[in-house]
Image (tube, rainbow, N blue to C red; front, side, top):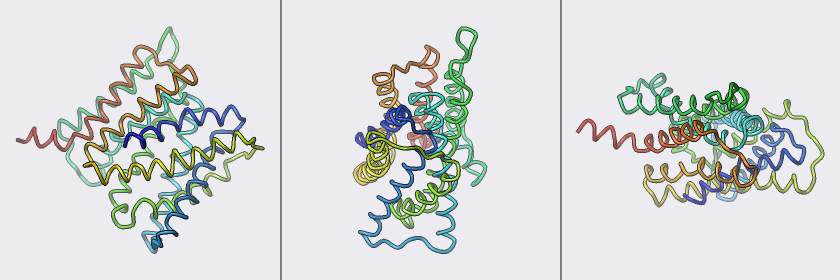
Amino acid sequence: MLFAAAAWALLGPVSKLAFTEGLEPLEVAFWRALLGGVLFALHAAWERRPLPRGYDGLGAVAFGVVGVSLFYGSYQLAVYFGGAALASVLLYTAPAWVLIASRLLWGVPMNAVRVGLVAMTLAGVALLAWPQDGGWAWSPAGLGWGLVAGWTYALYYIYGKLQFEHYGPVVLLAVALPVGALALAPWVDFSPKSAAAWGVLVELAAVSTYLAYRLYAAGLRRLEATRASLVATLEPVLASLLAFIWWGERFTPTGYLGAALVVLAVALSALEPWLSRRRRG
């Protein structure tokens, strides 16, 4: 689980290397989805797993259009406009989006614990964006795309609840990732790439996408879900640390408080079922 968190934490800082090589954010998202999809497809073929068909296949295609193309694209744009640290923290607003969606889609009651977690997340985002010295701490584009990334990342939880138990992430991502790449293609301005740029793209696809998912799955087989989710919350912490070391990115004092609130809300959301049972008890 620690290795999975570290692999995902590389996404933002390494993507900035691609930008320095002249690649645009959406092209980085395209190649990450396409190359990652190839790896998952090879994995599914090696294990001879059947692909989803009928309505399940259409669901995987729809998930690729929204949950891959919009998610991967918005995350790269968040890194480009707001920095790797901010993008990683805003990505973890996803549990708050899941709680809201669960209420709207399935009528899951919003008890005091869940309302508190959503409020904590919103407070963290507000502190991250709090004006400093008469100006905004972060660009509106960086904040906006980061929140879109968090919302689309929440679709992985929602879609996973519906489909991952039936087919497994490998098979569904083997379909969804290439579809997401195709949906991104019309918006991409492809540019000549150096060997270093290709190396960055391969890392994003092989390590921060395929290997990260495989490590996470291996961790889930050995840890119960609550502990696994808690360990995964180290991703924004590690990403912020790497962004500081590599790129000199810093939050404002209120920004650090906001980031801490978001990460704390994520950790508590993993404990939410236990907290709710304690409260009822």
